[in-house]
Amino acid sequence: MFHEYRDVVSKLKVDNAHFAKIFEKHNELDDKIEKDGVHMDAIELEKLKKEKLHLKDEAYNMIMAYKKEHNI
Image (tube, rainbow, N blue to C red; front, top):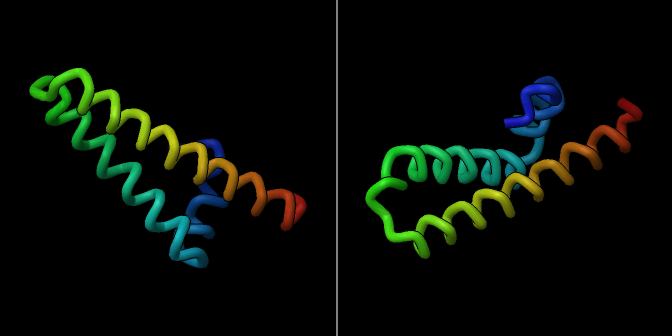
């Protein structure tokens, strides 16, 4: 996720516990969807995808704020 911002992501994962938690949860959901998605009903799968997208949006906003704050 966010390979183009690899340096910022690495910095935020170390310096910001909330970002690290969001990033980890996103990856856990991605793995769960990939592994178990075929066996879930459509409603549960959709719920997980929406939660994953929400986490991605939150992480992206934090990356952009960091970039703006540090003039990157």
